[in-house]
Structure formats: C-alpha cells, structure tokens
Amino acid sequence: MNDTYSNFYPQDNLLKIRLSNHSNDGFFKGKMLISTPSLKNAQKKIDEVVLVCVHDVEGIVGITINKAFPNFSLRDLEKHLDFPTFSHSFCHQKIHCGGPDNIQKGLIIHSSDYQTPLTQVINESINLSSNVGILDDIHHQRGPSNFIVCLGYHQWSQQHLEKAILDNRWTLCDAHGHLIFDHPTPQIWEKSLEHIGLNSQHLIHECGYA
Image 1 (spheres, one colour):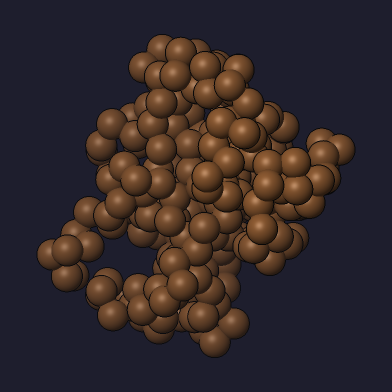
Image 2 (spheres, helix red, strand yellow):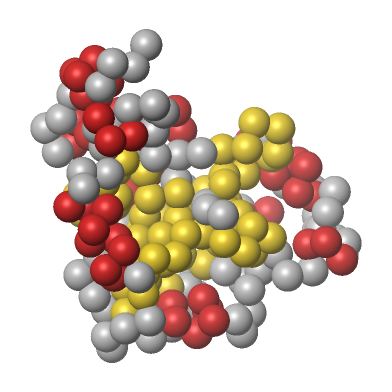
C-alpha cells in the first residue's frame, strides 16, 4: 500500500473510538447542517451540506456530503491502494472532500442495508463505515446499495457550532438517506433547502449572488 494512503481508513484513532460510543449522543448527531447564504458572508457563495456523525462531550464531527473532488474517483483510488479493480458501475464514482481535518482519513457514508460490527449507525437510513472491508464488499457486490467515499471531516466545539447557527451560517434538518443518495452531488444543497421549505434561488438573490 502506498505510504501516503497507509492511514486512509482509521482503525483505532480518536474518531473511530468516539464513533463507537453511543451512550452520550448529543442533539446534533444525525442532523444535516445546510449552509445558509446571508449578508454576513455575501462575499462568497457557500452551498455546503454536512452530515453530523458525532456529538458528544468532546465536540462535534461532521462530514461534507456535496463536495466531490473533480478529478479523483474510485478508479484513481485503486492506484493508491493495493486493492482489486472496482466494477465499471462504481469505478467512476467521485471521491468527496469531507472536510479539512485529517484529509487522508477515509470514511464511507452509506445506506443502512449494510452493517458489520465496525459499522456506526447514524440513524435509521444512514450508516458510516471506516474499515477497508467495506471496499472489498462493494467490489464483490455485497456492499451497501448506496454509498459515498469521503476524505477528511470537520470538527467543532458545541459552542462554536451553536454560535454559527445563531449567526444564520447554518440551518438544520434531520438527515435522510434520500437527500444524500437520490440526487446528483451538485443538487444536494438545493434539495436539502427545499426539504425544509426554503428556496435556494430566493436566498441567493437576497444576498446579491450572481
């Protein structure tokens, strides 16, 4: 395995340990954070959706689900991992940028029809896996029916995220598998806003975006 990607799948790191502890799950786990254009950040169009996977006493961890790397797919990943070739139906699937922290850490958000002892349940329709075995199962067509592969994640303190929500930088909704898996990546932000009754074009116009 290429040294650059030797830690692509976390085994015993902090994130893995925290994901395994469900006894103190906080309010934000299983929520989606939808970036909200506002006059405070009108200089830059922001259209990001983050799935919150962890909320505990140590803070909050989320993964961006709608920002794919333009030139990095599962086919490219094969070149870095000692792994069999993915089937044609999967090989062109884009790898997503999950966030700025630990960008070499790989995490797979997937439908709840796949679960192993290492799988973390986010809610009734979404699971998270971080072991390389899921790629083997996908390769042999015994993996989840829907999935996205992400690199990296976000971390916040609860106070930081609550302030950002109060400042209208994010709005919240319950995470649903259909919002993540049933729409093309560029449409997830708009569809998530529609799900909670907001019109993305109206918000963009209000903030003066071109």
